[in-house]
Image (tube, rainbow, N blue to C red; front, side):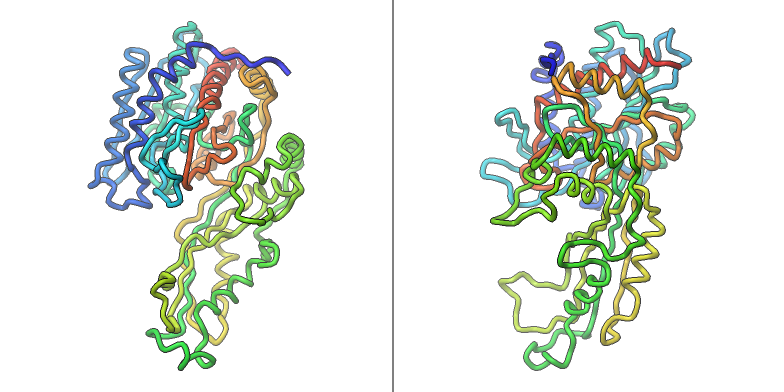
Length: 474
């Protein structure tokens, strides 16, 4: 393999200019609106976006227009626009994307670490939002500076940084409509909010799963009663939910029973997964903090990746009606509510998933117990269009140049709802979806970190990508 190289200017800019600003950003608890309904009154989102706006203006000066846009009732949006070089005016613009809103704190942070306390340790910048997805705008600005310094003639470069992605991007569609005429039709769309299989090469995402969030409630009483007096006579609400969940998931292996939620995996995606599995091997599951002797659902790397990226899965992410263990008395509780988080195959129609789940879970429950299913959100998955030859060649070449290894493509088990929105709106565009969320980076959980060497190398790769796009066939 080739020896990796890295422009000294990129590394220097990250160390001296980006890191201090990124650390200030991590200190701001700007939770996404789904986790902070009073986000506007608390002012953290405004602090975060103004911090980034001011930094961008200081770094870009006359190179780009940097604007904050706000709509009533919506989270703000940061817009950065550079004009095209005279030789590139007939080339479609590039749209670059990131977000600033964050997931909530979560517990379990190691001693000395915390969600709002940036700590740089062994090349890892710990703290909530650094990797998901605060680094994106800083990486983009560094790239814009590099392109200018190198005198690279580029088309218009449009950067859109939203503040509601962790809530499903409810505000993005309105902004896209408002910017439609100004944007035109992008020829390349770059999203910096995804994963990487390891930190040794450039990864790009070719599929994303959809996400369906619902609350399922079973009620058997109007109030709690003595569990000894009622046990054996009154059915447990938890028992009812267990029965309902058995309709949709096989608890022995985690497989979703409803065949209508499964899809046929495209052959090109299977080929990508085979190649990724050969590279990652046991890292496919060893990157997770298993407890005790817990094993993964499959120890076949290819099967595990297929299940993670193209199979439907279910996780229970919350519960109501269950008191904490320390105060749980001998009471047969009147009701139980579970929060269900389904990950759906990339090509499955979300409306189809909703109707299938409603049919399964709203059918008569045991003992005629009242059951309510409330769908909170239903977000589609995404399957990338065919990657153009010039883009494949560029990604492989830049990965070899800056990482010393070839680039690899892989699906992602998570969701980025706006990708389907963008691909429906711009079906002819090329897409480069990437990120820095590699092994142990733990976005959304405790001890989230940004792997600094990867972020710096990805910045250098982004410069190569935009240069190649400016030179690609029209």
